[in-house]
Image 1 (cartoon, rainbow, N blue to C red):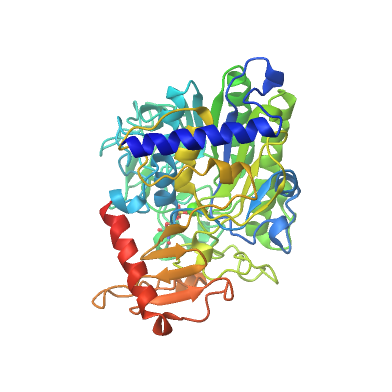
Image 2: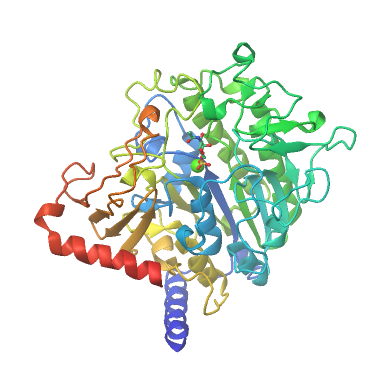
Length: 513
Ligand code: NG6
Ligand code: CA
């Protein structure tokens, strides 16, 4: 609409003015080419607000991430859109809330969730002249419904805006446990075809329920199917022996693929989504990280994650790209300590608080579900500092569009707000409201936080109990004032019925948009 175009123009002009006034132009590279900046997103899996050194981690050090924090802008109120992985990734890549497409945690053989031809963040950047790559965990589905893992696997990332992909198809705890590079399983062997099934047991690899003696980590029932590399996974798989990944090698394999991508694309503006497996389960860090923390595999996986970030940053610097690369470090949802495997995470936690001062964690409606460590690093362009701006990952789409000067179509990224000024200047405010998705919906309005009650007839999900996570799901409305109650302990809904009603209405309005 005209309004949208006008708003966009004004923002673009003011951003330009702001960049000019600090002596910066959109001409990094020493002004050689005037090209748009490269964009790298470090997308860690299940990393909690308190899991990083600069936010007070105990028992593990994260010097590389802390360096980014010191040199960049640290956001204290930045959010994933959802308390689980698939919906958060969906929103970041489409600029739309996950509920609009019923995005929920996917199995390893689920079809691609984002339709080819639809607007995506990498597709938008392609239009602006970017080369785009995704390396690491995908978990947004592949194929059309029945994947043949032994031939071309599509549609996938290449059909929705990425030029290159090297993937763990779903999660580390789901079959198939093979890498998929572009359209193909790496090291696929036509004499040993891969078959995947999430309902029917397949012969071939032993399964965890019947063979607990073969396991390196005991697992709950859901994680007790196919055993690969001494770890039972969700789902059944057969064949593909030469293609099986070795979990301990993730840091080496993924980091070296990222470096290859940077080297190959260094002469064009590029976008890299570096999507970690860490610190998701199963946690099997490389032996060289063993004992790097006092918290066992979960802490060691954090140390490994930190090392990987350092490696990629060093490569950027080595290639002379550091000044012209915007780096965003963040996570896909909040922390979970125990998530299906016995890896001693609970026992060895000590005084470490994965969610920092926040209540809840992965899956939950409380703040720790979506409020995650977030750093924007772009020395030379931005001033280091701390920002309390309210920001959602759904906003990256419109913000990056503004950054690279790519206009958005009417129906493109409808939930995404252009917060570029807030991302680049720590003194600027962010959103006035923000939606958090979990098994219910929460709404932030400034410091107010409202959690929508579940319908009376719906059972409250309670599977998080044995994971040590407080879900925050109730049949009654909950309302907290985070300015005095960051830990969401005092439900003020009874004293503020009008605010409860208006925030509920607001949620309904967003749903209908
Ligand atoms: C759940 C798995 C959990 C994890 C999650 C996805 C349970 C009992 N099991 O179904 O282990 O794989 O899916 O995590 O919760 S996420 O970070 O990709 O959303
Ligand atoms: Ca996750």
